[in-house]
Amino acid sequence: MPHSETENEHSRFTIDLRAPQLSDGAAMWRLTRDTGVLDLNSSYQYLLWCRDFSATSVVAVSDQTKQLMGYITGFMRPNDPTTLMVWQVAVDDAARGHGLASRMLDYLVDATSAQRLETTVTDDNVASNRLFASLAQRHGASHDITPLFTPEVYPDNHDTEYLHSIGPLTPTSAQNTTQKTTLEGNHMDTSIFESTESEVRSYSRGWPTVFTKASGSIMTDEQGSDYIDFFAGAGALNYGHNNPELRSELVEYMTSDALVHSLDMMTPAKRDFLQTFKDLILAPRDLDYKVMFPGPTGTNTVEAALKLARKVTGRQHILSFTNAFHGMTLGSLSVTGNSMKRKGAGMALTNSSKIPFDDYFDGETPDFLWLERVLEDSGSGVDKPAAIIVETVQGEGGLNAARMAWLKELRELTARHDILLIVDDVQAGCGRTGTFFSFEEAGITPDIVCVSKSISGYGLPMALTLFKPELDVWAPGEHNGTFRGNNPAFVTATAALRRYWADDSFEKGHLAQVIDTIQDALTKIAIEVEGTSVKGRGLLTGLHFEDPEIAGKVAAAGFEKGLLMETSGPKDEVLKLMPALTIELDVLQRGLTILAEVISDVTGQEITLVLNETAKV
Ligand SMILES: Cc1ncc(COP(=O)(O)O)c(C=O)c1O
Image 1 (cartoon, helix red, strand yellow):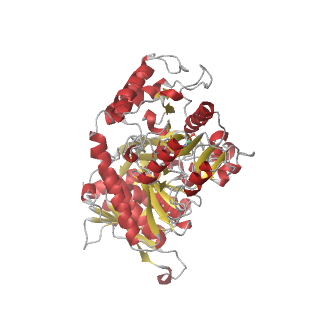
Image 2 (cartoon, rainbow, N blue to C red):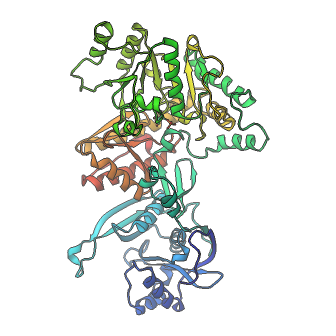
Image 3 (spheres, protein in one colour):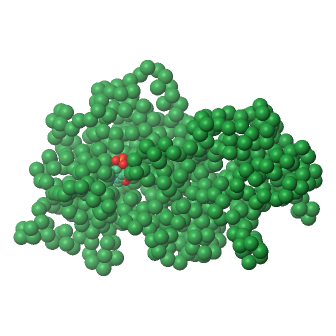
């Protein structure tokens, strides 16, 4: 090894990037041998490469030790002098996790003025697959992968080498043409998570990398690889990561000695939020709600809603729907459908029953037949419930979207029987379905509304429980909580409302365009891929696969190509797409292109995805 670093140590390298010289040949051969994964060619070949292909190759040499830290060898075919064919990429162990390979690749693309790049990679070479997917993303280039050398052409059982063809290449801001460059980073050491963090962790298993930065809809990991975020913090980042307009207000607030923590004391930040929420959200929608701060999470607002419904009506029972998800504390779990999550409670989850969600019987049985009948029959043995809690789109339960007519009927039925209607808008709210509240299109007014996730606009914990004024029967302090006054969240929430909801220009403009683009692409994919259908509404949407294994495989393949998506549904059979509402159209387009590619790779079905006009940028 040229020099070593301790495993966890943050490190900084200054390296020179330059064309290889004959004197580099021996070190290139040694580095290739020491990687243990690259095909080792004869030492003679590396010397020849340094002599005859140096104009299309690069070496990275430590400024301090003058030792070779990495190289990329490439060539340009005489009949295609604008395409750079990359042969081998090697990085010394001590330099891993610093984005060195990306930096060398950018240097080489610039140095050769290549308009396209080709390379071959085997399927199991995760690092190289990520490296080239990331290059394609940085350039906004298309990235085609086709088998080039299949096992039968090899004498030695070599795995299939896939030809990656990336282009057109254009200069990007990420490129660095200077020869001396400083790389900072640390080894992507994940051992502390495995040894010390509980087995309960889940997202880090599906996306096994260490994320360091995020801006808008792009997340970057310690290796310098970029990912398009179609997950948006499970709906907590509707305006993207580190939205600069919200951040500037936050930074100003945080450096002003204003209150950060205030329980339910009065602060200017909370006053501004309440006034803005009333003026921009409630009043224009004719909604007369009191606002309660129940604690900062989604499950906090659900607990408060259930508690209030019981207190107001004096009844205990709550009805909720098949495949519902309302949170992980006991009250919320009792109205949740998922059996694995319910089992986690380790005790009986009582005082609630499940009723069929819209279309549970595939339209063959009238939706509210049973409910209407048992509520009218005093001998039915079914206690009259305090409330019915519903998600207009079941985010975790498989992206089941209720029809507007069904929601209307539910509202009428609950009103007729003096049952409170709670809409849990924790995930579907804050613009995700195309309007600020997900129930607006149905023209209904719920008695209680649960809001959280994106209400702060910045990923800061915050939740609201909204209810009709006549339901405000709380005694002071009857529902409490230390973290109900998260002032930085009030500041970003106010900024988000002013920026995106002061009028309908965002809703009818960019948001509508993003929804149109994604729905159009999903519809086209569903037409082309057998056994697939579009689920959800607005930007809480995705694809259902008849074979329940496929969604997980597509999500995993998407990660390898730099696209973050999760799955949903009782069998994780639905691929869930939830990009930021503010996602740039070109980033959305790139994400949808990767999506089509990975679905095609996993299902073996060819997809020709022509994005609609609005997506063309
Ligand atoms: C509809 C709904 N309600 C409640 C919750 C719980 O929110 P939290 O995880 O913040 O407690 C979620 C979380 O995904 C949700 O989707």
